[in-house]
Length: 366
Ligand code: FAD
Figure (spheres, protein in one colour):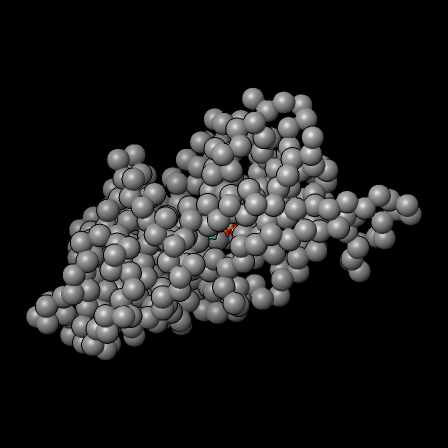
């Protein structure tokens, strides 16, 4: 139980990044006070809100882009942690096949030791339209069950939740109080948070369909270039651990597109492409359960996980000037945003990075 004058750490943002960071920090610092402050919370009312990304993810681990050391470490940590959660039923093993439009170059398959059961497909297993392919076992989860679970874990530890849209770093810091610290996990919100105003943050629109398709039991994706980052129209199917038969069918990767409305032409073409890969999608018991649009919170230059010391009261053209004679003080903010299409698959690793940075910078005042 935190004491009266225990340091107060505010986590701004209750998506998978904020909740995972709160989980790791509250485990390491049981005597500190933690509050998750967010406009959208993992509660019934917000689980269908398009204002945040986390409810709309697949969510599985799948390879995106070329090898990058930091991201590899982050995703390896996350993969192993999710793998250990399989017995809980929140995470499932997922057989996967990915097809490529070019011959396999071993150096470009950087993920073969990250996943399980990796093998290169025999030529006769490669579908038409592709040149080569790989098979492996990955993990998937259902955000609609996973986020409330994270919240319940935190609540059981005494972490409190506050629904609030915060306008500035100053406002968030005042919630923590002097002697506290802030984790900024506001995703696309980092664009408009006064004191951050990170214009490198941008959305990647993802339109998907949620389906009941009990015979689709494999992650399949359309032929891609080796090391490619999907753009425009992509094709993938992600079966979920629960409820039984639920599969996320995707999708699009539309950069800088803020449009939250469903496009039925897009929905039809996603369905048609997935049907080519998985004929089981035409079974008579298959049903569409929902049309979804979510915005992946990306950042040019990659995710930002770093400490920034602010001098408060904050001086900004968008805030009233600090009161005359107001005492200045330093305040620690750890930024953790911009995870784009890979927030779940990097979540536990990102949370560990936040905790390492916190340990390095935060000195509780006596
Ligand atoms: P968010 O979930 O957007 O959370 C941001 C939080 O900050 C919210 O609580 C919000 O209310 C709060 N906030 C923002 N501004 C303010 C403010 N000013 N004041 C108070 N609160 C504020 N990832 C994977 O790893 N695997 C997948 O298979 C996958 N599939 C995806 C499919 C689709 C269609 C989409 C859309 C995304 C997918 N993703 C996937 C990406 C993943 O969803 C995101 O990377 C992840 O959810 C980002 O989490 P976050 O916590 O950074 O952001």
